[in-house]
Image (cartoon, rainbow, N blue to C red; front, side, top):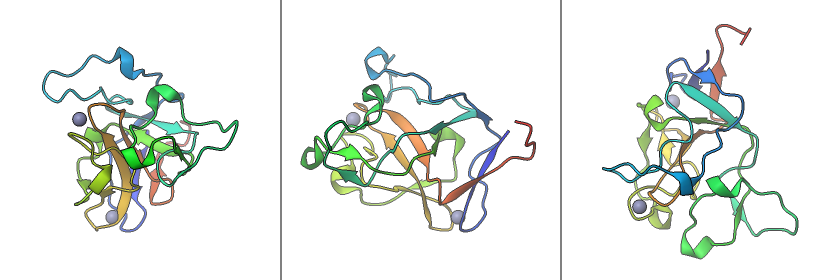
Length: 164
Ligand SMILES: [Zn+2]
Ligand SMILES: [Zn+2]
């Protein structure tokens, strides 16, 4: 089991989470839309996390030929000014269920990085720890994936039992 903490203040951000073997293969087209929020189900179920080996999130860059980009079925919905750009953000971010990090708060003004009903996740770190440090990026608009990515440099994983 693993607990994720803020690298700046040490606050625990998640409960004990179980590591998944890879990122769940979700397809937004297969989504059972929630009746209330119409958000896609979280890519990662509660109580677990997955490490995303691909570059994810900001900064975004123009695509280069033959670039390997994130799986298309989990690609972020892009603001109009940034369509066709690809993520060049950190590899190995930990994806957790948004409700498994209840102390995080959404940063104030997201500007064009706010979709029709939630953050797109395209503007970089948009979730802050209680200490004020940006530690994670939430994507939670109805048309895109529903994922909370913990920044690999601004959070750290504590494993009381290293046999896992
Ligand atoms: Zn903190
Ligand atoms: Zn929406």
